[in-house]
Length: 146
Image 1 (cartoon, helix red, strand yellow):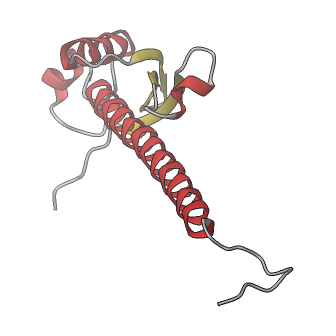
Image 2: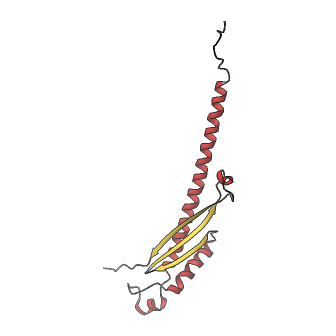
Image 3: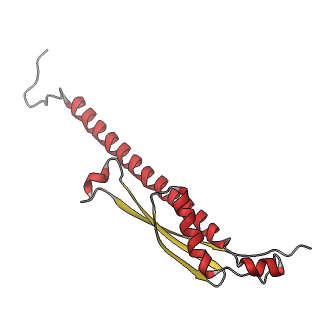
């Protein structure tokens, strides 16, 4: 067989395409793993903030409770709410940082933050970590039995 002049030699083209495809696949896997790591860390942090807010919403005024029982008259004890939230966070053993606890009417607001280091893109930021911040709220309410 005679090769015509001006014809291209396509040998090796499949190798280059294969290498390009492999690089794209590795990048896609790295992005999915990093996004999943951040998503799961944020979801766990949100669960901890929710449970801390619930612990704060259970810090009722004990004297009022013993005097009148469980009724809509019971209010949260402003002095006990912060301590209950801090105690819950400390006992849970979570490495997250409790940033703020506030009481508005009968609603406990909690803000927590934590850092996460994605396995692949962690080297892109100077510290290698990303800060996540979440907020949670819980309200003290009573249902009247009928």
